[in-house]
Length: 198
Image (cartoon, rainbow, N blue to C red; front, side, top):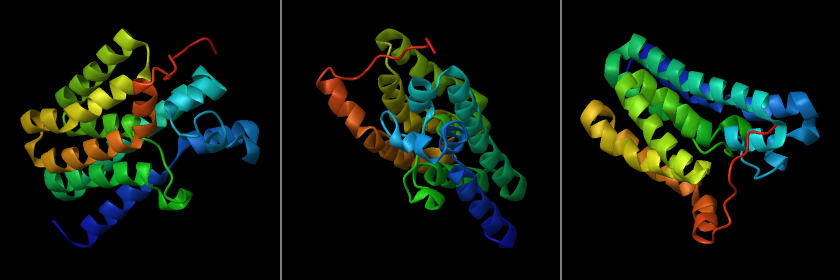
């Protein structure tokens, strides 16, 4: 698996993850001072974009974040089959959460993670989405759905993508860690409910 092309695919996957539509779209709308990292929760992700810039900006952010996860897996699969696809998916997620291009301060990994698991196995991805949606609908908050999906990531990988299990376990732990402020707010009953008014 590890030849020059595989290495290039892995590097490309990481830098695909570095693409931050939240930062780029927010700067396009509000200039440098409009950077989403200076607004709302400071997280460069779909939920913060929805709260600060509205539905259209959030939709663009979500779509691009999902697609870069899909693209990373497809590149890996084309170059080195399933093993490289799993590695590229993992690296894209790490590039999203810890992007060198943005000072290693990235998003929490939910949308890109969804794109990755959808590309690995559509059933896996749809079940992850279902878990997130159930918790979102019942609580009207994004973070419980995100946390539940992160916890389910390695469990579902065991059944639908065993070769991805250890990557999924590591990513699940990191995603939960990235949501530690949300966990504190949930415990203190301070987490905001989502609104689609904009």
